Image 1 (cartoon, rainbow, N blue to C red):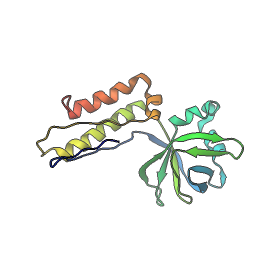
Image 2 (tube, rainbow, N blue to C red):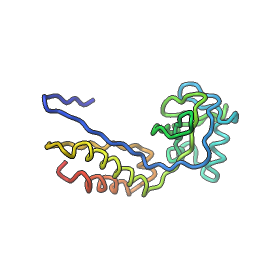
Image 3 (cartoon, rainbow, N blue to C red):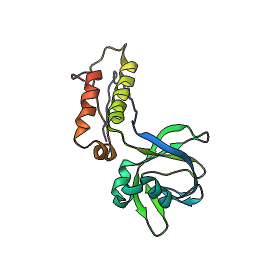
Length: 171
């Protein structure tokens, strides 16, 4: 953990993923905690493998590149993403990095390196808009995930450079 204190400590944050949704929204018909058993009444792993096509042979590792977006009841994105941490062949389920609501909707997502970099730029722009009229010295903390690293490979530095171009090198 990190602690900050003082009379003049303030915070601003920005967040934008850059993952690209694809395919139709799917109804979560059976889930418990972080285990997804069924989508649209069909075994979740079977449907997931169908979407992955030739990449399914590389499961579970490749799943980091194809997370699930959690949608609301009107099938709009909420900005919540669930990474698939593992698979269970015996019951055709997916083990997610976080709980998933039954009777909610999800949509598959995939990585697009350019969109991931643009996502970092959008997040930095959000921060700058929040602090534009404040005279401060700042500290910027960038948080990423292993899925982004796998998707971007050596291009992860581009995210940092994109943020620096907006926030500045001194922050």
